[in-house]
Image (cartoon, rainbow, N blue to C red; front, side, top):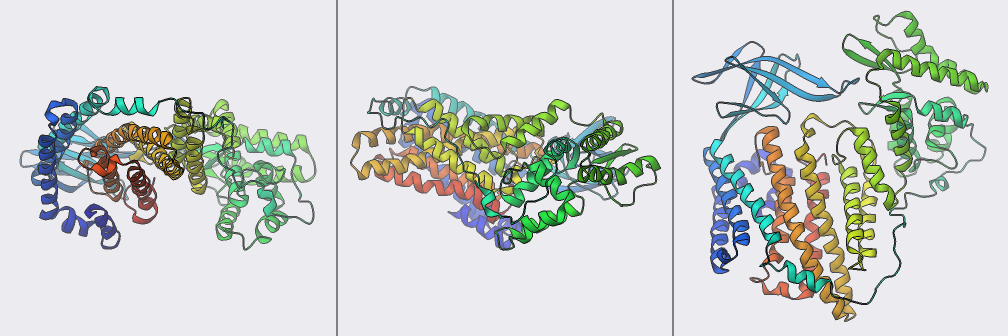
Length: 632
């Protein structure tokens, strides 16, 4: 309760205030000391020393808290500013100098991939970058910011050799304790499993393997009506235009991706009436007046009208049509067709093509010259290859993205795996970097669990898909999160992906326990005692891997934070609420001490209520409390 209250105070009073008056206060440390003593007393009272795996699990938290205390008492943290060539005395006997600072961009774009500082320490060169901390004489340097002229950097400085060592040893004990507990024969897991799989009558006989998970604003065409047919460009021409490459969201992708996002924002679906996204987008580009009237002006009161107007303004400003790349030196710049002033470094011939080719293409389309239109499209593609062929996506990659865009509005269970796989390939990173991707992954986990468990637990045939349906619905509500964008430099870490995967798997299990709780209360209401016993045993069984996954996920996140910015725990609202969630769900594991959890009805009511902590951790922090983790 104290930690949760602190996150609310931080929202209104700021991070520095809660850091000084709550997290850094003596009484807060005293509370953790009392908790540690209570844990040791519990170990002795329950004779956990007779069960080595469980005792190791509990002792690991004591060691972690001791490490945190040592860090609190002995660690040194500061921020230093370095300029190229100017020495800085790290200590009285250690001097460092910034040799070079560089920004590494994604190929063919100006989107940053990494920030790197090369530090000279004697004859040694130390590289400090995002997700790579430099180490000099036990002082850890991590990248924070850089000067606007690129000749200076601000680095975080941390000295904590003892606290980190103790804490990491506690993490190792925790991992060993979790593995030992899962393999131990002296826990309740085996008896719960036997109780959960007892034979019972078949509750549901229909397998929902092909049931759509989310009805994506179906029949969006019903939202719009037209008194006269709209002018639409040739379908084949639109399809070929969709394969032209464009700079969009700081990445190179086919125009079909832009067209799909544009159509989804304007109509709520990836297509409209019988028209594909390419037909809608490129028809609007050429016959803009009737299309604007039909999809924008005729529906001014439709929800999201202001957002749609903003999208249309971006469309007219050329932000969606940066299709002409030109390399000047090592930098690649992208230009939209039209009358903008181009750099003098670009030859007159290329300038003319950039400014006029789309006009020629429009003329060919309007006058019905299909072959002429195909020829101009081919010349635009040839221009792109001549300018930056070395960084353009391959034909296979382009076709994969075109196929992915077709899948984006289809939410069948069998296609979620394909969507995740294609998104992984196209983005170049595991798709777990924003709310849309994590919800899609969570839905996939729930469906996999359904496939694994439904043969023994038939009620999973509706519980799993229903929970996955909710996840996909939330994913669709995230809007722009469905767009593929480059990762921020700080997120370029495999540890982050593993951290998010384990946490989302835990959340998926908590969601199933919540659904099982609702079903258990139904069984209790209609006195289906035999089913109630099995459902309760299954929920209690799932609690073990759920707790362990969340625990591993939290401490993997701590390791990632330590590697990225030199501090494994900063009491960020997301961290705080993840810890609260862990403690809330850990309470039912101690039913030997809290007898109320032996009563099925009380247990399930608690598990339903506990899911509120998950919702606050995921949604409350992202949309209300904010913090470093609010990007996802």
